[in-house]
Amino acid sequence: MQIVSLTTDYGSKDYYVAELKASILSRKDDFNIIDISHNIDRFDIEQAAFFLVNTLPAFKESSIHIVAVNCNYKRKSEYICFEKNGHYFIGPNNGVFSLVFDNIDESKIYVVDLPDTSNMSVNTLLAHAAAYIGHGLPLEEIGPVVPHFTRRLIIRPVVTASQIRASIIHIDHFENVIINLKKEVFEKARNNRRFELHYKPHDPITFISNDYSDVAIGDAVAFFNSSGYLEIALNLDKASSMLNLAKSEMIQINFYE
Image (cartoon, rainbow, N blue to C red; front, side, top):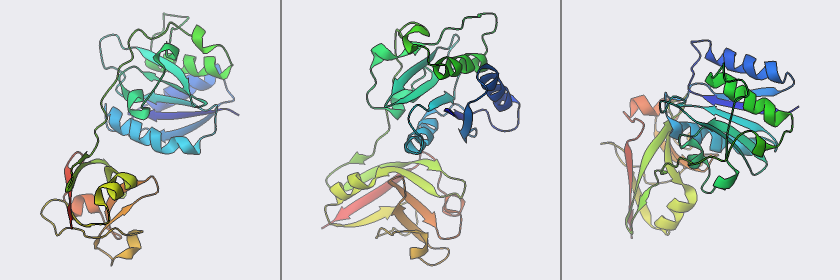
């Protein structure tokens, strides 16, 4: 049974998710649909890419991944599909996939054409592309090669000889704070030196822990999570609200000999 994953900014209040799922299953009823998230912040393609990047390793090859975030990004939005590393991807040509992959062969990215132009809704188009792929039809016949693949710049940490300036990219359900800094980048810049991790006017964190429970309940902790990103949390408490930390704010790490 082929998997179709869904990542959208539709939310859970309205009928849009149900409409999308019904549209998909009406065209191929043996798909196994998995929700990555429907609560992506509105229009936030960076968050959508972050969610997709961190869930992809759990999916088996031949899975189909639909991203429906910031779909109305221009007057006549364009939707694309392509295959990468044994997986299939469908979504708007608004830059989200350039944030997922560093390199994509643009000659193998195709614009999704609808055979019936009387119903041009986004959900109908996405469902058509999923069914097309699910039935094993040639991807290059779904539509023309994309004339221009939209790319967006990935916000990366700024690393100098004595400092790293990184930013908060996600606040999770438990209000843990995720930083756009990977362990290998931190360790290379650190080079076995002492450090101070500064966040707002709080006392700096001076050591990397292994888990939340390495500190007392209510204390701040920093560690690299299962996805390899730096995380700031409070043991059994809400780091974002208690420490007044918000998405896109800067985190600074200073190194000392």
